[in-house]
Image 1 (cartoon, rainbow, N blue to C red):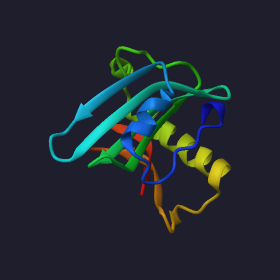
Image 2 (image 1 turned 135 degrees about the horizontal axis):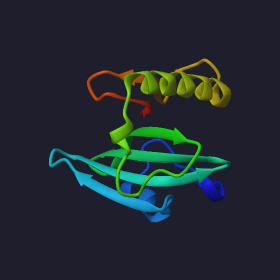
Image 3 (image 1 turned 90 degrees about the vertical axis):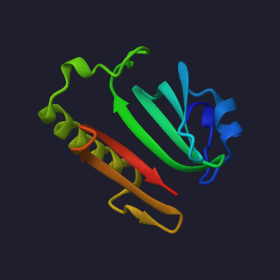
Image 4 (image 1 turned 30 degrees about the horizontal axis):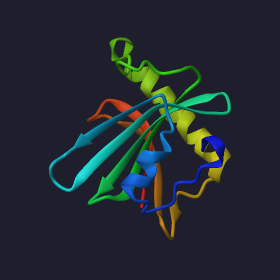
Length: 130
């Protein structure tokens, strides 16, 4: 993470919120115990991330990641140019990126990592579950 910040499994909401990792924070309370904190344009090296942290009753349980080579719009996700072919290519990139960062393993004692295309949401992402 930027500045050597580390986010541990089961981190508390307030600690992650106070890190202010990106250019813009957005909150979504699902009114069922889940709260999402999204950080746009978290820059690591030459890449930009959208990180969406899922907290269940204040404890980090999930992270959704999008990775791009240029900054994301602060107003929208740019879905006006959406194509399934582009999302499938993005899924392949995410899989390769994970291989380069953590190797081929996706199951760990603390949880798992998934990358791919989800036809229901019509998007590709990396998902870390604790």
